[in-house]
Image 1 (tube, helix red, strand yellow):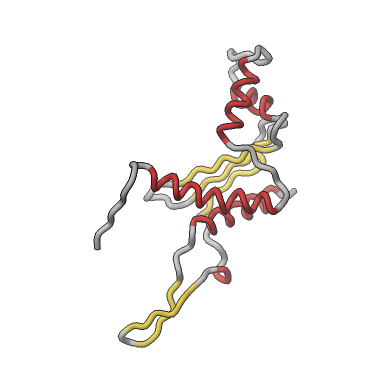
Image 2 (cartoon, rainbow, N blue to C red):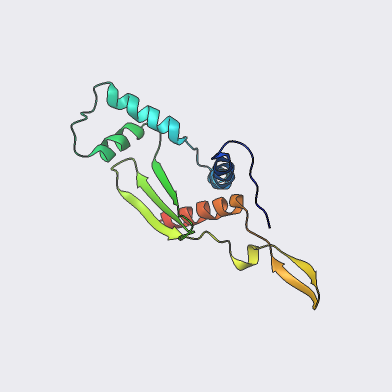
Length: 153
């Protein structure tokens, strides 16, 4: 077996990131949420911090960033993907109102067994049913659904 990649190093990571974001953001938007990109959120909070409204000497930078973002967003979702030894995802949702943690959890984001796709493969001993790999878009969708479920009061 041979594995070959072409293009700029790190380009494959961007592709996987886009597929994951597509499932995640699409699910939130279909539920009625509006999303603000991380880069835009960072620029908005940096601009608010630079105009003299907030003191950079504050020991609680997270709270200052949340106050700056409160004008544009109700929640901040942090998604951290595990590495090869830990294939799961860690999700943390913060309220911009007071910088408190609304929910935090870890998951593999595997869809329920009933949602997994499979196909039949011919083998020397007959046909066998095999599960198809889960797409990153499906994983993103599952992450969004789990997050929404855990944010419910």
